[in-house]
Image 1 (cartoon, rainbow, N blue to C red):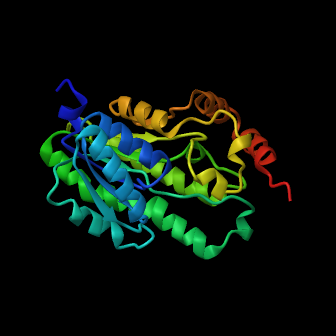
Image 2 (cartoon, rainbow, N blue to C red; image 1 turned 30 degrees about the horizontal axis):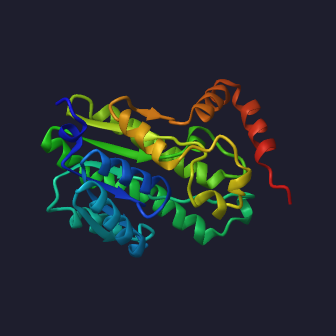
Image 3 (cartoon, one colour; image 1 turned 90 degrees about the vertical axis):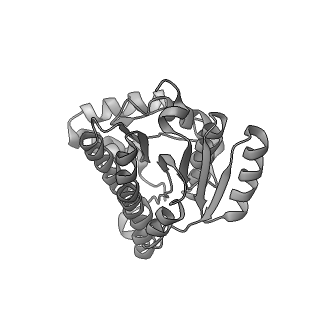
Length: 261
């Protein structure tokens, strides 16, 4: 199978599609002729995206309202896709929190664990058997460079993203020879709403990658798992950090990430 659509089509599921990297994936997949199932909480944004992508690319788009903070939501999402021939799952939905670990709201931390970890694992569990039966397809799990090592002052978020890395690496090994590709994406700073929500001024951030470029590079590297960082700056940075003695690397990160107040 020589083309992207033959290998990963005819349809793809994208979670967290209402903004940021999720929207970038939706746009890039539509441009490659893939029909879409878009899932997120904000249906109004999904409907706007659906209208634009159908008009621009002539593909079919289905919208599913889905709040992955609900532990039962992944099963309902899998069921909602039952009639679609899903060849690619982009499990992208997630969020982060920064600051001193003990000052993080415990309820928000639990919700983050559900969205970032439970949902990704259950979505993979629901779709992997279907893809194995098809004999082709792809599973793309969105983690973060912060999942590559412990992240002081981003401790809980980095821990959730580390689970995603381990999940993707394990599935990559299990699914060799099945025709199903697995890639765990570890973006660095990427154009999205997330930075502002975590207290960063987007105007002052450097080495920020566009969401569409991040998505395009991830899709181009789907067959090159198990993990892939699409941002050259952050790829080089974390290669250096993970090669350092662990204590030294963590102290350097703590110094760089320490809150100013």
